[in-house]
Image (cartoon, rainbow over all chains, first blue to last red; front, side, top):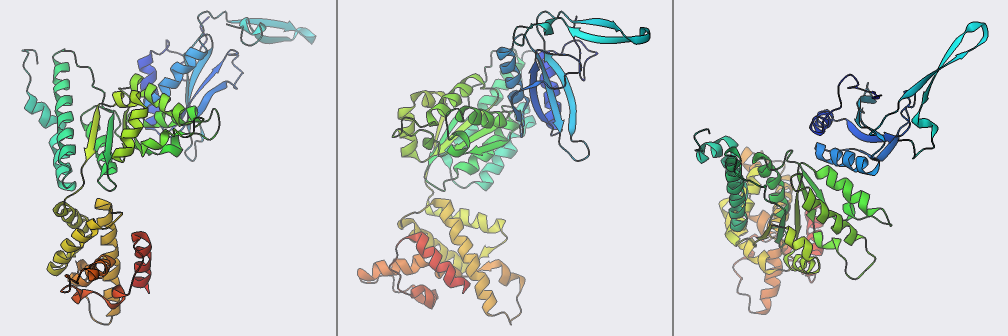
Length: 138
Length: 335
């Protein structure tokens, strides 16, 4: 199951060239770009690990993209995303966030139903990969 | 280009390189070897672009450079220009200049240097990284110095990310040579070693006039003569720093001019008064009095000069250190 999250979730995976172009767009808008990775991509897990430091004051996408490549090399079987933070007044939030790398196989999630009082149903998402300890998941 | 011919003149026109080169000629006095090299690089990049348009092999040549020369010969100024020129030629994508020294690259404890150097390199990508006084990166007397680590990362990026950034090292000639001797890898990765010559007196005067016109001042004819003389004398003194010395001299002349105008503040001032640097403003410099002191010993050949020298400037000054004297002088002027 292909996991989708973030800005371009409705599109097929971006090519490297498209990723560079997106980063270029972020830098043109003076957004601070950062790279994050995780092996626990539950939709409610908003806390991914940051790879290196956030990249301030860059002028060219090459610097960020080098960091992305570096992260791919270090975590070949993790999910990796690029975030662009807009620090300008009134926004002060992430403006763009998209997945740039994913593990080779994605087992996906199980939907579990739990019957409660009065035939009340509670739903739960369980990641197949998430059962294993961190580092052995994908 | 389907017929296999290309028009070099048209491409040249289109790139607007001439404009940049003209500006370089206008704003930078002298520096023959530097300008020649910039022309050569510009030509190479243009021809490269043409070759690419005909699907010929056109590997972007590595353009890392090393600027050597005495203080005040224009190394930083040219580096700034270089970023713009390379941007116009399409060699670097953004054309910004990141100027750093040892402190920005080398960390203070183990594991600090690599991220610091990488961060600077990332900032410089798409532009030019200018490392001033690069020889300080390598400190042979301390084998645990982290500078070496920084050099290794630099080398790696200079080799692997040639398309992303241009590195320019700058520093004094002799120290740079020693730096390259102990880091042969660095030397061989730098394609262009450009030596900045010292300026001739005429060039220094042209620089002075250029600086003044940028500040909207000008010399009076008498001051012009005096300043020619000033240059000759200043060049003999220690710690002469080419254009930088000239700039400092002009700054002090402006100070004296302001003071002179202030002393007769009751009189009405014309626009001309405000713009003109006059002879006394130049002659009051300690270079003239210092020179006199020195020559008094060998029979005072310069006896015709002191007409314009202010009384204060004639005060005995045993101190030969220009920095110290300059301080005295400015204090005197502001009093």
